[in-house]
Image 1 (tube, rainbow, N blue to C red):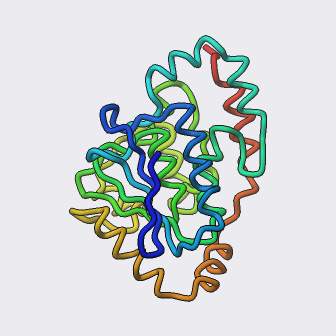
Image 2 (image 1 turned 120 degrees about the horizontal axis):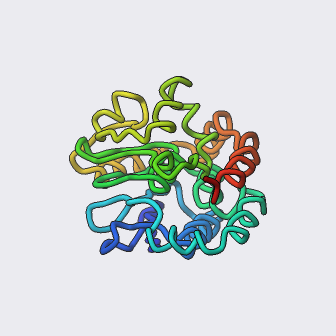
Length: 235
């Protein structure tokens, strides 16, 4: 994870381009630590992005294979809930707790855990040809990285359940039509920077208060962990 700060805007980049920024346990922890490090930083906005033309392909396959051999440890991680949820939830949910707006600049693939990270931002700018999917249904699992806090606030219940149950893939343009993306742009990172500058021109106190009016991170996280702990490793 790479963090750069310029003109009051922090850009946090998933920097594993050779693997399409597939997420590992270490990256989960590094994402959370990056957010916490920005909590009291002199910034007005945060941009989440991926290196190499992709946002994130989701969980690294080698990590998924490793998880199969230590299911008891994974269940313990799922049930060990802290201030921002468990180890899997907090890299996503922590961004909503920052007092500044967070913008995800999405191009290329945005699958599974990567999709949930993008949904954890306040705004999403997607390339029209980006590929977005909540992939967990393909593995007989549920999305468990804060999806209860994001998806139901963006979509009607039937559409949210459809995406979770089917793992249907959407383009960035389709995601925007559905309401998952704030905007589409041929240059998502450039547009995210423009938005960050615009937000930075407003009262930071008012921006922070507006964010608090909408966000609520408490309900639903424990249920995600409970259900996933029952599903993982099952037939």
